Length: 226
Image 1 (cartoon, helix red, strand yellow):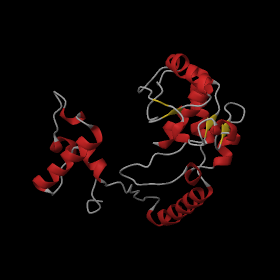
Image 2 (cartoon, one colour):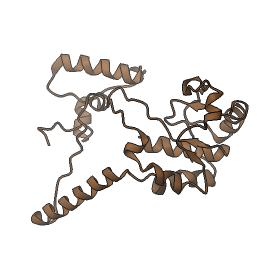
Image 3 (tube, one colour):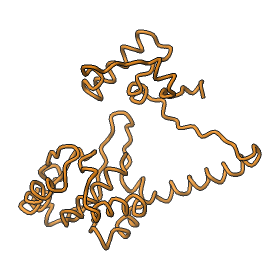
Image 4 (cartoon, helix red, strand yellow):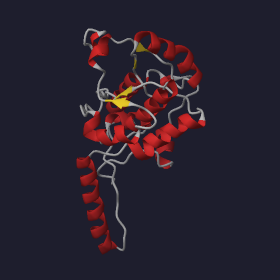
């Protein structure tokens, strides 16, 4: 999820001819992951790969931060609508950026339209396919896993099972599937859906069919089912 938001941030920075500060990740209420950008991605390479397209800095210059009493939270946070067009950014965000010297945009999930000029889409692609390289510890672990898969699968004619350990409350709630928890489970999942998606699953005409979802293969498998 982070990758899409980061690529959009790079695209917006390029569109506005602005300097991008290394993104700060929001502490997700489900994952409780406190990882920073440098924990997941190679920060030095990210800055280097974009050097000819978008200037990226690790933090605001001290003289600019001083303008906001050395408190990032004091920088105005612009509430941008989802899927905003490049024109919106040029007409609404850019003037504020020029006026204040720095702006924040949070949340930033899906805040840039899919349809953008080719040069801006190119920045998205550059970010996604080149600049966002995983940090060295993650790359080393991935290489070890691939090596192990190759060696192990050679004993089974190249076949292996890949399991995504993602059987969690939010995913189960979003799938609208039922398991063995009865009414208590249904009640908890209804609460989880309302907490995370506020009415999305109660809209008029929306029908939840757990049985059909399972037949269609849309239900996450439990560890026992795997």
